[in-house]
Length: 429
Image (cartoon, rainbow, N blue to C red; front, top):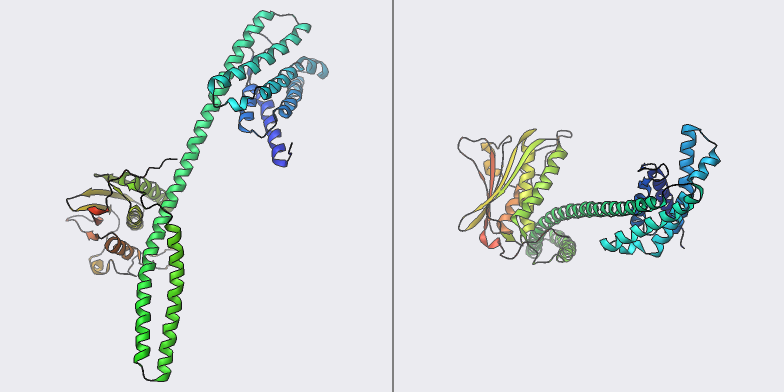
């Protein structure tokens, strides 16, 4: 048997919990017969910690429980010497030694997936062990043996049902928690990849600009007649060429990683909005604001362009959160007409000045800054949105000013070809 510190610690934990839970009990009709939670606790812990040896734990518990019960009674009442009290509880050791032995022989752990066999096996372990214990007690005490057997069978059945119920409920809630954690990690990964793909789009755009600049530099080199200027132009062209190669390596590496994403994977708008709502609520809580976030959709279409759509909506929602001082409302909606799917992100924040309308989507334009440092924002958010919507999705993004309203409303129109009629990608595990 491979003994290590972790296994020893688990043996100690299982034994201690069983001993302490043994103090929670009912005594139906007799002073010596206990319906103890120790048996339920021991059974469940042996099922959870399957690497823990059953026989070792049962021996420890068989010694520890009568010692602990005798000690508690002695310090509480002092009505008899400790050895006498201990001998009164000593028959309990018979029960736990036999229980552990039968638990191991009947391989109860392997029957956990079969409710009927599991409860029958546990019932047998419990009842047989108790029969041997009262058989010993009958040698030194007088009581109704037949009635005791009846109680043992009934109580054993009750404990086996309670154990299975607790075990099933705990497994259900554990699986539910694990599933929730997986979904949470999936949402975070989805948002990360959507952001990464957005940046990859602009890296490709930068590669085109670099290629154009390199050609212009080389063209300038060939046109110049002055040797010194010509050499400098050639050096610039070579440096740009090196930068281009670095860009190619970065983009190629990112594309190889992202290409592992299945192109046939899709999501429906309801699923996208569910992810966005969860993320927005976290972001609002992180910023310490009181903002109601509302999501509404009218045509739940499926699409394999969910990464750029998530990136666009997430960017607009982030701007809306920043525009609201402390309390407000953000509404995200989707509808459609004969040619387009229309996404709207509206907030009742500080609004946008009329003077800024012409430069709203220009790179570098921003009215946001960090109050702590005074540092301005990069101002590339809305330009990113416009580039993704226009060049990748083939749509349009615009700011809409409603008559008599101070709210900020951005509208994204995407052609209906972004829809995919296949079944949406589900968050199932």
